[in-house]
Image (tube, rainbow, N blue to C red):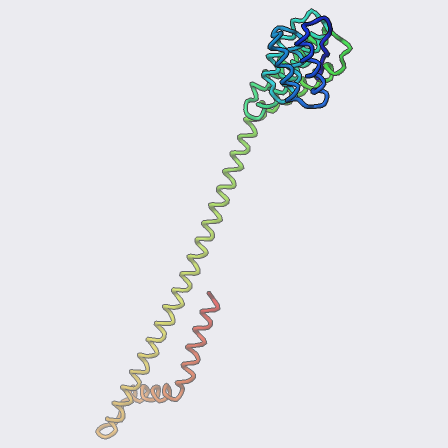
Length: 263
């Protein structure tokens, strides 16, 4: 960023304020420098040098649009060196403004970058030996090209992103569906096992009761008549059930534990 020391002759009061502002500027005390430059501007609002130095301090503070306004007033200088410096600083300010909106408004950023290029070119017309202006010009040209290429590929990238989002969503839905089916199968197995156990208990209980009934009938029938073959079989089953009662209970517990393992 170029900064000029105010030459003589000039109004005494603005000159003093500018000198004090320049001293603060070189000490990187930009707030103090701005205060002094504004004092000078109040006395000499159309001074090319005052507006130039005011623009440099505004630029350092990141107030780029205000810097542009100040450099615009400095570009009408009869001094070609001062004019070239104003054009160069204007180009820098335009570039900074463009960089601030690159992520939110690519078209606006490109427009400001192109304006920046024009000012670098104008500065080089006044001073072809300005290597900084040439370097910045080449840099901004590449920046514009890269941003335009990014805009060109953006629709394709957006489509790819949408396809990937859709694929991810379908994968999550399928995973949730599989998990739901797995939980359903487990619940069904649990219900089936419990139902089978209950039915088996009822059947065994029914057989035991029938056996006891047959036994009772058999004992009563021994006094009056002989048992039929069917009654004899049921009676034997009943005796066997009573004798193996502990075994039956262990089998039930064992069956219950097996179901628990399946859960």
